[in-house]
Amino acid sequence: MGKAVARRQRASADPGRWRSAAFGALLVCIVWTALAVVEDARVTRALYQALSETQREQDQLLEQHSRLSLELGAMSSLQKVEEEATTRLNMTFPHRIEKVAP
Image 1 (cartoon, one colour):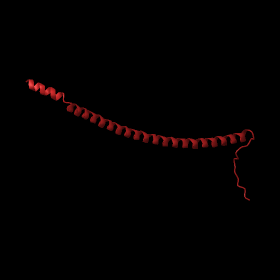
Image 2 (cartoon, rainbow, N blue to C red):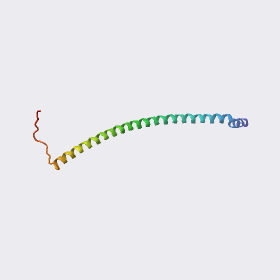
Image 3 (cartoon, rainbow, N blue to C red):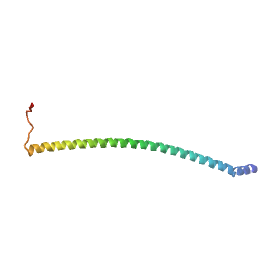
Image 4 (spheres, rainbow, N blue to C red):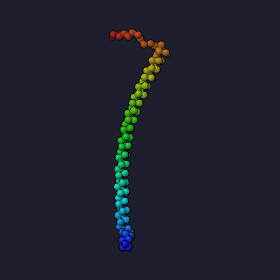
């Protein structure tokens, strides 16, 4: 029995086993880190795609806002002209429109 205990002590003290275990643990950590990097790259691509779509939507909304602002400006200026014509110049829209021939 004393020889078996001595053999176990020698086997547990064997630096080769510890190196193998440490190398295995290090290899597992490296693979796990590589998988985490791949996942982060996938998430980054997805977020960048979402950002691009959002920027495209923002550009479209800004274009629509510009068109509507121009239209509002045109409408308000026509309304101002009509209001000035009726109040200051006492102009009215004709009830009967006749075509004048040359």
